[in-house]
Image (cartoon, rainbow, N blue to C red; front, side):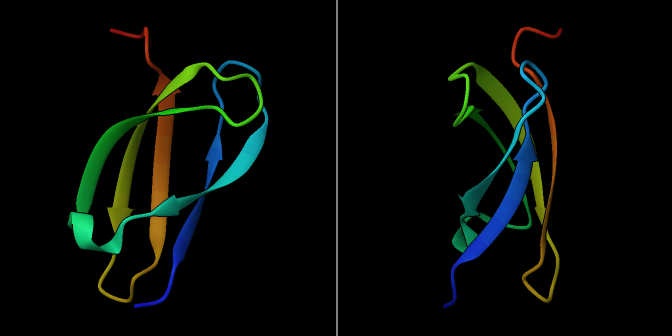
Length: 64
């Protein structure tokens, strides 16, 4: 299985960074990941399509 990466956009500092996605984690994944730039927690909602392409939405972890 090839590595899958997704670009995440930090809602705190505005920077973008690539992060590995887990293809074995299912079609829809929700998790917290720290920003690679400012280290603040980001809530990530990741979707993997049938072709293995990943798309992600991010928001602040402290948003209700």
